Image (cartoon, rainbow, N blue to C red; front, side, top):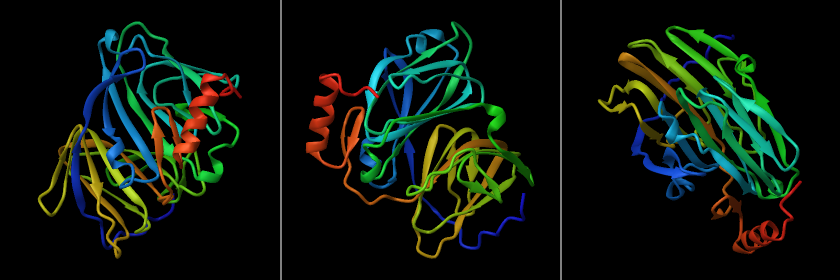
Length: 288
């Protein structure tokens, strides 16, 4: 790990977001944190779902076969076991601490079904948009076991680098165009963590244990998303845990600045492309 570049002008919290309890798939209970009205503000990210329950009835039905086109799904499993199968012939088991990264591209039909009948299932699913020129690319899939996610520790912070780069540590995934950063950060009580970022990137954090506190008096409690302001002279984030420590995900990326047209599991640039996506699915052409 290289010596970190100090953050001299940290971003301020622009607003806090409370997620919306909902269900998806065959009745899986979850919290939708990044919703459709925030897509332009947090471009290139389209959705973030947080799920976590010890009750099997909340997750056992899973997500049977359903289609996607035009974006990528990134599922990070903190705890639990989920089986992926798709129409491109991919299959994998997502387990504790692992990541499933799927590029839907021109279209794929997949299922995500629990391989447990009891115990806790907890994690996140993030939707990352594709540039218009890549929306019809071939589907792609990768399982990233927990052991393959780089980690480092620095002054009370333990960081898992899922995508992008932090403190000289390259993440498990890299993507051009959107340049996503995806970190899972665990902070000891009172510890701080800094992350440099281009001022043009959009960034948010979601706290799922403990809380964050800022010099301005702002506090970000558990189960809240903080969106950070895009201040022209800012050079990154400075995050400090409260008295009980904190655990959170940090998500940032380069905006695509393209039109977003969404209809359920299809995300394209125009209404005409959406209509074609629905037609292709109905006529059985959404199979790799």
